[in-house]
Image (cartoon, rainbow, N blue to C red; front, side, top):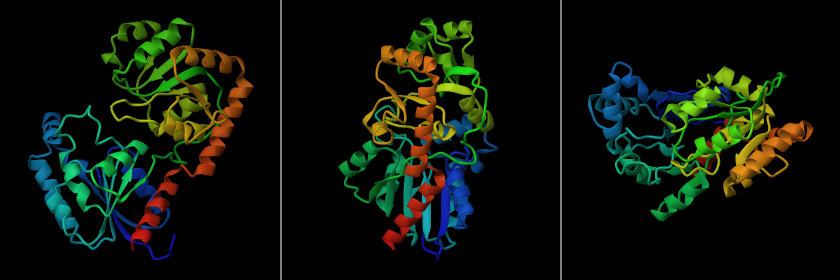
Length: 339
């Protein structure tokens, strides 16, 4: 990167440390001139119902105040305004700003599973962008289909201070860390458990599963993990399963980087996108429940082979530059390419 740092403003919710906050912290570590605007701060005193209502319809007193304060904030001169998943930002607030406007969305704004109004403000902002970063390869085609060509891929990341390998006793045979989604993942896990796999499931929403009582009886469900015990649990696991959200049409997810960062072997559903990131010496792929069961049994029995895959995945992560600092460097290089 060049030495003359651009002045950057990141606009986003800042509710979770793995999203906007991770980019912000990485920029601070790189000694970049970065500021932030936290949209969720405008809802801290709102009732849960009021927040959900305004967030759903993208209008209301808190949303209006948010945009009013952002407009004041933008009187400062920035070189980059980085809008992270901007659902509540009005086009009029950003329009005519002299900064380079970058837009990023880790969800799929073209997914038909969102209600028709969900991405209304987001899509209004797109023509203002100097550059749009797509989370997944599919969205590159989506943006092009609506006439936007100022796009590139900015994948998710792991955070080296959060996702790392430690020496731990392997107390968990197979772990799945993730939310419930009505895509038959519960039936997949039911199949594994009924075939004798010692599986532990960590994450929210599993009470919505039709198999919830079965999972509770088998005592395989555990509460969502904090950042610290998430990393510890991965290090304690012999194998970790990765599934992809059908809501967002994912072909990979951030766990595809977080898990290899711990040297834990990753059992991951095979997609073209994940195959572009790791090969079969760096991850364990499956397509059917029978194939998953076979590979779970095989690699639990052949632990040295599993460990070798975990180490190779770790090394590929490093070589490919999948840490958040690498993504920040990509953002800054994109700015220089436009300057």
